[in-house]
Length: 60
Image (cartoon, rainbow, N blue to C red):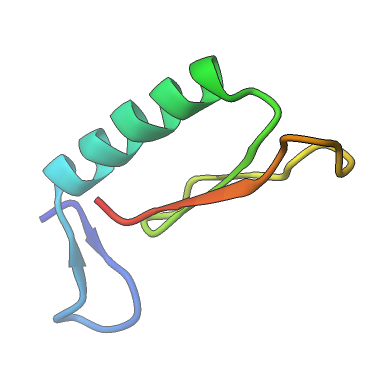
C-alpha cells in the first residue's frame, strides 16, 4: 500500500500510481490538447476550449 485516500480502507497501491502515470503520460504525449483528471490525483487542465479538445478521466 502506498497511501490511503478517503479512509483507511480506501487504499492506493504503488501499482495504481504507476498505472496512472503510464496512462496519463501516454495521453499527454498523444493528446496534448486534452485535459486530464486521474483517480489517484493526476490532473492537468485543458487549454482554452478549442475544436477537438476534451478532458479525459483515468481510473486504473
